[in-house]
Amino acid sequence: MKAIVCTQYGAPDVLQIQERLQPKPNANEIRIRIRATSVSAADYRIRGLNIPAGLGFLMRLVMGFSRPRKNILGVEMAGVVDAIGANISQFTVGDKVFGLSGVGSGAYAEYICVKESSAVVKMLKDLFYEQAVAIPFGAHTALTFLRDKAKLKPGQRILINGASGAVGTAAVQLSTIMGALVTAVCSTKNIQLVKDLGAHKVFDYTCETLNADDGYYDVIFDTVGTLSFSQGKKLLKAKGLHLTAVAGLPQYLRMFWASLWPGKRYLSGIAVESKQDLEYMNRLVEQGQYVPVIDKTYDFEQIVDAHRYAETGHKVGSVVVRVNI
Image (cartoon, rainbow, N blue to C red; front, side, top):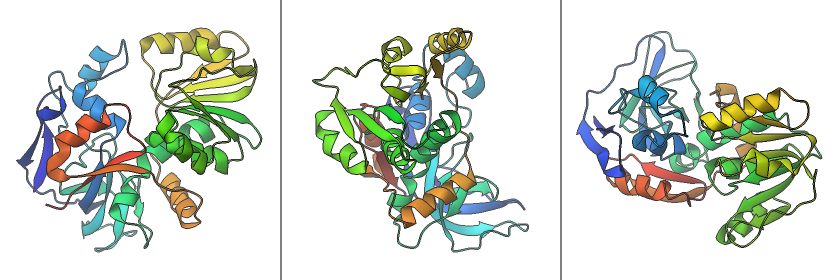
């Protein structure tokens, strides 16, 4: 099979298409013929070793020093089940599925084997592969932060920074579904998009400064890691919560210090993959409550261009890669 291999850490051109052995599923695995993948923030950060401050050595220790040990990247996938193990009960050959590949990555390939218990579910009949693959990363990250960490409630006010990215567009929609009042921060060209997704108010960061009254927001969700706790504190209510999806050692130290005192909190963390969350997202899409947002779509052999565009920081929703070699 063909796979996109990260030959070393660095610029997008370290990615190369190579021939690899086609995997075979074990008794508890399904094999997916991948039809679409994406360039998520996780993918281009790992490729470029673009790691938050203070965590570089730790990440090299975990992932590999000169290149990723698991050098086929890709965390999102959509495709068709083409082989199953002896103990599989939830899937059959021919099922169209989408989901997350887990910590092993591996979705930048024509085939991947994943456990039946992993975060992979059947696609809705009306979805294209490109649409399905734009759901998992942003949605499961937003759900983890909004539902599990913030425990967002109807009527609460939330500020979402980076509202037009993959996580941001998911967060705007999910916050609205949860009944919150959403204020979004994005650039001029994306204002109408985030309004259409459910934002009640939008700040254009290219020409406006956040100027809400003190104690205005119950929750701040910074999807891109550009809003510091000190900047956000004046916007939070007395027991408000500032969440950041991107945090380095200085931020974690600040979180520890904030936890020692009552009042406004500062949190980050990792998003845990869940089959149940993807089933939930399927229901929202089927009911017309959630729309996967796609910026650009590239072919498999254009992976370098796809990474180069995604890491500009100006992508809207997801950057999708078709796997149709």
